[in-house]
Image (cartoon, rainbow, N blue to C red):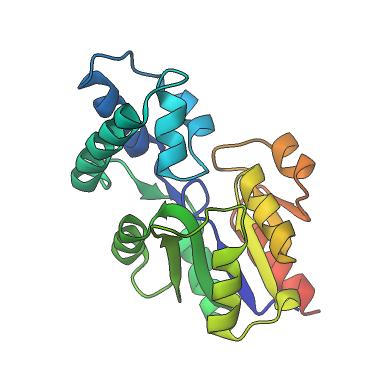
Amino acid sequence: MFDYVFFDLDGTLLNTLDDLANAGNYALAQQGFETHDTERYKYFVGNGIPKLIERILPPDSSERLLEKTHALFAEYYGAHSEDCTRPYDGITELLDALADMKVRTAVITNKDNVFAGELIRKYFGGRIGAVYGSLPGTPHKPDPFWVNRALSDLGADRNEVLYAGDSGVDMQTAKNAGLAGAGVLWGFRDEDELTENGASYICRKPSDILDIVIGSRS
């Protein structure tokens, strides 16, 4: 029975793609590099901002260039992270329905913890029980570090938790943590990637997550 749902953030709860792409392209343009189409950012994101920076720059970029680009990205994104970002249709209703069922929720994301917390507060208020974002010196998903921290903090058993995310990294995270993974199709990646990385469920709309939780209780 699922009494907890842990969510990824970007591509799962919030469509952040345009703002991430705008920040990345700003950092590139400031240094005279070619920018990328927004759609390409679907495959740059997912492993944290340092990896995104590495992916948008030319191969074998120096550490100094990576650091400068990261700083430019963070400067722009800090001021513009809410320009285009919106919850996906049906997400707020899903969170309200889960709360009505006394299902506890958390976010586990590779986004910087400060940015993640600000976005969750703005768009969801108190609907999310806890937020675990990237902090210096801690591993990124698919390492289960933050999932394990959430399990401990919330007193949850692994068989009580459904993990929902839109990428292979999320499904690997669920697998590494011993959780059931629900792959969602409204985000940045496709069904093949989700199933190849071990999704236990495939969700085509947010209410499918609610149906999984209800089904686990019948």
